[in-house]
Length: 188
Image (cartoon, rainbow, N blue to C red):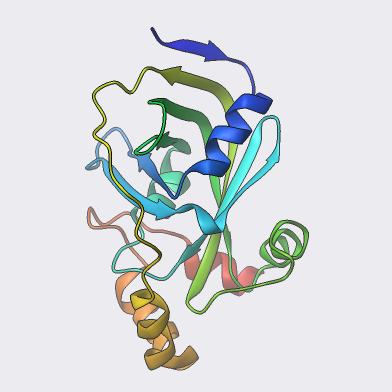
C-alpha cells in the first residue's frame, strides 16, 4: 500500500542514502514527458522539505525547460538491492544555473564547493509530498560501480567546448521550450 508523508522522514533519508540511482520526471501540459536517470553522488537532502541535485551537461536539457515553463518535478528512488521500496518526492523545482550567485551559494553550502567537470546547474525541489510504495515488482540488480564516461567526455571537451555544446544542445528542449540557461547566466 502507498503511504503519503508531508515531509522527508529519517527513514526516508536512510533509504535514499543507500541508493545509487534516482529518476527525475518532468513535463508541461503540452510537452513530452521527460524521465532521466541520475546518480545519487550529486544528490543532497537540504531539509525536511527540500532537496537538490547537481546536474551535468548532457545531450538535452528537458528538465530545466519544464521547470521554467511549469515547475512540477518528481524524483523517484527505488530499491534494486535489499528490501523492496519505491520512494517519490513531489513538488516544485527550479534550476540554479552555473555562474549565478544562487548556484555558487548552494554549491558551497551543500556540495562543499566541489564542482564536477561539466556541471551546468543545480536543480532544487521544494517537496510538498513524499510517497512510498511496496516496490515488489522492481527486479533485483547488483551495483557494479560508477561510470567515468561523462567525466572523460567533459574533460575532452574542455570548458570552451562545453560552453559551445551547451549553447547548441541545451538552450531549448526537444519540444522547443527555452531552458533559460543563458538568460539567467547573463543576468547572474
